[in-house]
Structure formats: C-alpha cells, structure tokens
Length: 353
Image: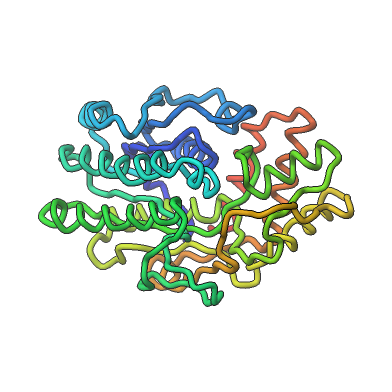
C-alpha cells in the first residue's frame, strides 16, 4: 500500500490543520510535496502540536471558522484545489454535552459550508470527509462495525457525525453525481500518538497525570476501544484519496480505518500499558461521582479497506504505545519535535512500503 509520488505538486485544500490529526497530516502532506491551502481555528491548547511542528514552509495556512461560508468559498475559488480533505470538527464527546449547539453547528453546518464551497469550485475532483467510528448506532455488543451498519449516535458529538454522513450523502446525490467528482467519508478508531494535549482524552490526561506525579482518573476503565496510532488512519486517508482520484467510480462511499483486533483493549489496559512504558505503577484510579454516558464497547472492521484499496494496519498496540511514549519523552527532553515527528513519519512510510 506504500505511498507514491502522487501527492507531489498536488493542490490540496485541508480543513482542521491546527488540530492533533490535522497537524500530523499537514506535516505529512508537506513532506510529500503537496501544494497545501489549509483552514482552521487557532490551536486550542498550549502547548499545541501545530506550534511544536513549526516552522511551516507552506504559507497557505489560514485561521478561518468553517461556519464562515463566504470565507470558505472565497479561499476555495482562489486556490482551485483538486483534492479536499475535510477534517475540522468539534471532536470531544464531553464538550458536546456541555455545548451541543456548538457541536452541531460546527460538525453539521460547517460540513455543509465546506461542501457548498466545493459545489461552486469546478477544479475539485476528490473530497474526503473525516467523520468518526462513533457514527454507528451502538448497542454495546462489541461486534465490529462495518460500513453498511446503521448510523446513529446518542450523544451530541456522535449524533452530529452521523448527521455529517447524511449531509455528505445529500450533496453526493444532489450535486456531485453529474460531475467528475468523488465524495467519500472515512471513519477511524480511537487515535493516539505524540502531540495530543486535548482535554478529556486518555493519552494527554495520562501525560498530565504522569508529569504531575499523580495517577490518571478513569471514568470507564472497562470500556473497550479500537486504539491505533495517528499515522495509521492518516495513511489510509492518503491512500483512499489517491485511489478515488485515479480510479474513481469502483470504490466505496465510506471506509473504516481501524486497528487489528488484537489492538482492541479496555481503557484501563491501555493506561496500564502506558504506565509500563513510563516505568510507573498504580497508574490509574476510578474517577469518583457520576459520569456522562459512553458506549461500553466500540470496535471496527477494516475488511473493506483491505479489499478495496489494500490498506491494513501495520503497528501493533505495543508499537503504538512505544511510538507515543517516545514522542512525549523526546518532547520533555527538549528535542526538535518537527524533526522527531518527520522521523516517525519516515519510519511509518518504510513500514507500509
């Protein structure tokens, strides 16, 4: 499945470039030689991966809210991209409970604004919209979801991402079928890796607790999730976008990108593995009080991605933990994190070549 020189000189419009996944993807696209224009809100955390990876050699980075339809349209028309990767979102479940209207306006209407700008930009040939593994109606059975399973979502974040899928379906059927354009969605598992400092995510919560000499507080230690290194789904997105551009019509409208089933693990198992990687014991405690509901089990099948584009996960759960722990260790020691991150990308490219 190795990446080719397809991306060299390719005009790519990316949303969400200052977030965790977006920063990694921006760096990778820059490494591959893409001509990038990117829009996002300013980084929301300090420290932030986006700032750690500076200096950015591509100057096409813009601070734009995707709810600003006019700004998106103006940039899209001016840049005339061939490929659009829409990643910008309100991506935190607990925040979606705190501010559901913000979540729906960003994830649903923001996506509609992006697609409407594309509708008015004839240069676009391929659109990849990143949603979530949480788009599926989850009964907690633990059976891995496949792309044809029913969409749903009880919490505002999950529901907004299922709505995003429906918005994509509407634009595909209403506006894009008569054009030489492919629109697809991608659904990744629980993504971890170096450089995430978001609130209410396991890895950054663990790092903050570790650096403060405290155990991490877990709300649902027995919850099962499909953990994967951030470069795994990003590599899948790049391969899928390339295939959509070059092959077009014979490909699915949606793909899952999840880890090997051996990487399905409970929250507490991952926390304990992180503890071993950092040589600490008694790494977690049960958070007191009542907690907002979360699915007890969520797993994905990536069989269709293997069958359609030859993608499969390459890193084991232990490798994922080791790469993640190494990134934060290097950061604590004052390493050049742009160079370190590029080295991890290079190592991953070698693994998939």
